[in-house]
Length: 242
Ligand SMILES: NC(=O)c1ccc[n+]([C@@H]2O[C@H](COP(=O)([O-])OP(=O)(O)OC[C@H]3O[C@@H](n4cnc5c(N)ncnc54)[C@H](OP(=O)(O)O)[C@@H]3O)[C@@H](O)[C@H]2O)c1
Image 1 (cartoon, rainbow, N blue to C red):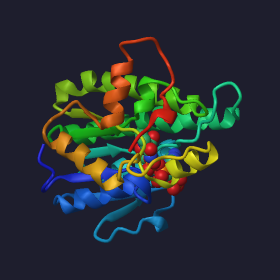
Image 2: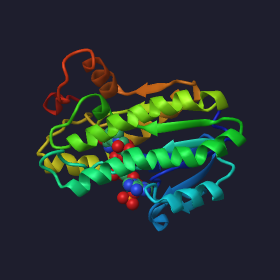
Image 3: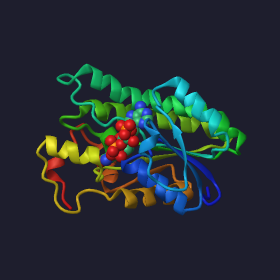
C-alpha cells in the first residue's frame, strides 16, 4: 500500500497519536480527512476537517457519506480512561468499551463499502500492549483493547475477499496528554526515554502499513506478546526502563 496519492481518514486528529498520524500522512503525500468530536480543535493545516464522534451512529454515517474517496482508514480515537473493572465507575467502563470496541466496529462497518469501491485499501486499528496483559488501575481499558484486538482479527478475515488490508498497531507507553495524566495519577515516575514519541510511533506504524504488515509492535508490544505464552499477569509498569 503506497500512501503517496492515497486518501486517508484519521479519527481523533485533534491531539495525541491521532494528531501525529494526521501530520505524517500529509507528509507522505496523502489527502487527509482529519476528524474530531470538536473539529475546531484540529490545528493541522492542509487537511479537510470533519466532525466525528465514533460512538454516534449518525455521525459515523455522515462521515462515510462525506468522505467517499477514502482508501485508508486510521481508527485511532478512543477513551483510555476506563479505570478498574470492579472498583471503577461503571459509566467509565462502558465508555471505554463503547469507543474502543463499538466505535471502531461502527467505523469499519460504515467504511468497508467505501474501501471496497476504492479498490480495497487499508484499515489500521490502534490497539495497545494492554490488550495482551492487563493494567493495574486500568483493567477496563485493557479488556476493551483485548476486545478490539479480537475485532481486528475478525474483520481482517472478513475483509480479505474485498482486498482490504487490516493492520494492527500494538504500542505501549507513548507521550500523550492522557498517558501523562495516568502516570501522574498513579505516581509512576517514568524514566527519560520510557515513553515513545508519538511521531516516531506513527512513522513505525505507517512504514508497517506500507509494507503490508498485519501487526506492527513497538518494544512494549513485543514484550506483551511474549507474555501471552506464560500465565496471565499485569504489565509490569514498575519495571519500565528508558
Ligand atoms: N498514549 C499511550 O500510551 C497509548 C498506548 C497504547 C495505545 N494507545 C492508543 O492510542 C490511541 C490514541 O491515544 P492517545 O494517547 O493519543 O489518547 P488521547 O490523547 O487521550 O486522545 C484520544 C483521542 O480520541 C478522541 N476520542 C475519544 N473518544 C472519542 C469518540 N467517541 N469519538 C471521536 N473521538 C474520540 C479524543 O477526542 P477528544 O479530544 O474530543 O476527547 C482524542 O482526540 C487510543 O486508541 C489509545 O488506546 C495509546
